[in-house]
Length: 445
Ligand SMILES: [Zn+2]
Image (cartoon, rainbow, N blue to C red):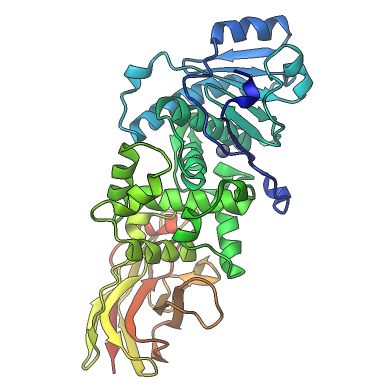
């Protein structure tokens, strides 16, 4: 069978500097059994052609990148091997059962070097960033080491899912899971999976979180169903990868939805994948849609879906003073108080919130409800109290989101909609992790 007649999975990972350059994507199924490559033969061919070869347990990496003291290529097979174990875990597979699985990756500076020795066959279509065909994949050299590693692992996930899981799923899942399982940080040089990147420095040039935030600001953020419905030939821009990653990370990590996602992933990764997910007992499509909107509304580095999960209970009318403690380790918290649009709510606070350690020293910080200006998050002092309501139809358009109605130590506000009032203490996602007890909030009519 001619190589170009084989089904292939193709995609382009655009660097954040070329956001606008939408490109046509070929995304079709390939036969996982049809494309075996012999790594030993590849190694021999590469060495004869004067290419550099880095061999690990699960990856043979070939590159025409000239050697330089800091090019970090020799560590990539070990990073890939550690990632392979995480991918096996994700799919409930024993890595030991796949000890012989070994992909061939070509890190390409000059495609002609690979074409001339047969390591880039004529049937492989032109690609800007990466391309995977079964056990073999190619990626263009990237100047940024973090982005090079990401792209290598992204293609590696394609090879893994195509060959070990026979993946032929909708594009949002195929690309989203590749993004999810590739996203990582190095801890003492060792691969550590971070489905949601912990720090921008870990994923330089990736730009997924920034893309989602920009879509939100432009009122163009997709709903979960929009992501599900993305056609293969309409998935090429940074924002498409960002949205597919966001949906996959959300479904894999959210305490209410991860079970259904895992059930769907345990079945065939085929064209019915999205439908099977939606049909999984316990999967509530409306709830998932709202939780996804809350996720994209608030996404940031270090976002923790367990901490940020929201109780959407309708609450009881506010007829007398209601007192509650606001937990600074969590995101938006339902006060249990429901109000009618246009009604006035008064609030006061008592006590302080324990805001963890000062970023530059071993000093425990506490804060009253106005916040402490020693440290800021998103333009507001940490420790500051916010009160908000969820708007299904924001007046300025875009997806549903929280609207902040009041902040600080006391005051009053007018309800923007019928429904519960939510409270939270301002802090960064990572900052929340070492917080302690929160202040008391009193709401009255
Ligand atoms: Zn891809």
